[in-house]
Image 1 (cartoon, rainbow, N blue to C red):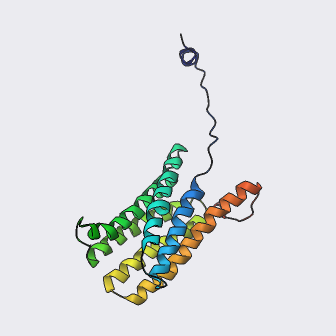
Image 2 (image 1 turned 60 degrees about the horizontal axis):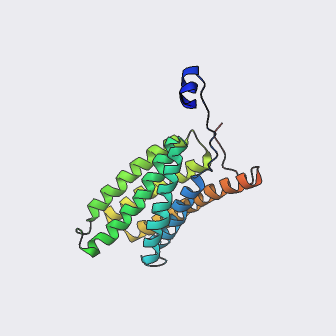
Image 3 (image 1 turned 90 degrees about the horizontal axis):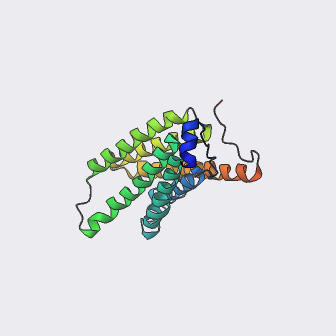
Length: 202
C-alpha cells in the first residue's frame, strides 16, 4: 500500500501551502501601460503604429493572460476572469487592426465597433460591481475603464474627433490608475508595510 493510500484510509489530509507570488501587479501593469500608450494615440499625440501593436500583443495580451492563469491557480475567480479576458481583448483589438491588412476579412464598420466596445463596457461594468467588495483602487480602475469603453463607443457612433480625444485623456487616467494599483502592491509587499495605499473595503 502506498503512503497516499494510507493517508486516504486514515483520513489524514496533506495541506500544500501556496508559496507562489501575487500575479495581480503583472496583470495590472500589462493593462495599465498598454492602455496609457493607446490612449496617448486616441488623444491625438501620435499615430497608431507598431509600438502600440507590439504592446497590445505581448504586454497587454500575453502578460495579462499569464497573470489570469496564475490567478486561476490561486482560486481567484475575479483575477482569473478579468486578466484573462482583457488579455484576449488586447489580442482581439490588434486582430481587428491587422487582419484586414492581411486580407483576413474586411475592416469593421463603425456600427460593428460600437457593438464591440459596448459589449466590453457592459462586461467591465459588472466587474466594477465586483470591485465594490475588494478595494477602492480597483474600483477606480474598473469604473474609469467602463466609462472609457462607452466614450469610445460614443466616439465611433458619432464620428466625433473631440469625443475620441476626451476618451483618450480619460483612458490615460484609467491606465495610470492601474499602474499605481499594480506598483502599490509591489512596494507594499517588498517593504512589508503600506507604502502606497489601495484602500481595501472594510
